[in-house]
Length: 321
Ligand code: PSU
Ligand code: MN
Image 1 (spheres, rainbow, N blue to C red):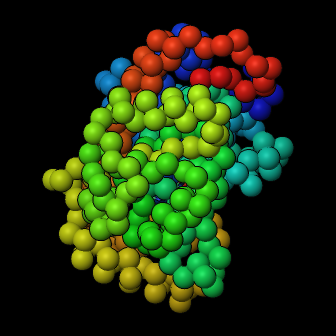
Image 2 (tube, rainbow, N blue to C red; image 1 turned 60 degrees about the horizontal axis):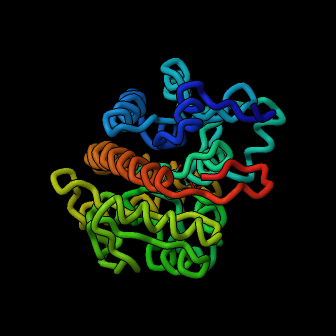
């Protein structure tokens, strides 16, 4: 086992048999939702992945190790810790491991852990992106760079309109990240089913997504794939109500001088309060939906891998998919 990485036995066993596994992040547990919704959601996401025929692997840093696959006590520890737990992105991982600090992994850090463990599919709610006003603040989430460089498929409900969605899509285009709309030709806007912006590629099925992953990585084109799935119709918010709450929250963040890694958690919490928790209901529903989609992609990708005879592995320290 890796010096800094612990893969839970059930996850390691599934990976060694090439069974489908879905990675899940932990910043959404600590910083994305309030207690006890965060714990309920963390547990139910794992159940959804299992029901879809895959093994869940929630990722966090605990006791100075990257843990891939958490147990019930670990989930509870994170959920109770809430925003007192450190939020860890790529830049923070070495510090947390060297100093033995606990932390919740963002999309970027969860992708890194998934890749180290050999898990090609990861389901979450929303990704970070280019923030509104980035032309002056330079606030661009490390999630986008991670998508450019790390070979993991991230399933999300698009990105929140707290971000500048056209610039986020431009960034992904520049960095060569395929953005797939599953069953949609519009990029979803998290609470709302559509941002109105076209996605570069529409996919009709999880099998098609799996074939695209296979083609990308067999070609040696490194990096991630973003699969965007709209929030289920019955849980979507009215786009105007969501936008009004976002505008309000952005003004508050500016007035309070919020910067750096605190921006996204601040905005998420304020939007939740301003919408009287309606945004939370949408959030819980869409993340469960993404976990189910993630399981189907993982199942389809594992089936493709079993059908393909891989050439002898080149010397590499990374697990091959
Ligand atoms: N967007 C959401 N919910 C979240 C996050 C983003 O709708 O919980 C979290 C994810 O963990 C994501 C992180 O990786 O915030 C991005 O933070 P930043 O913008 O500081 O990179
Ligand atoms: Mn940022």
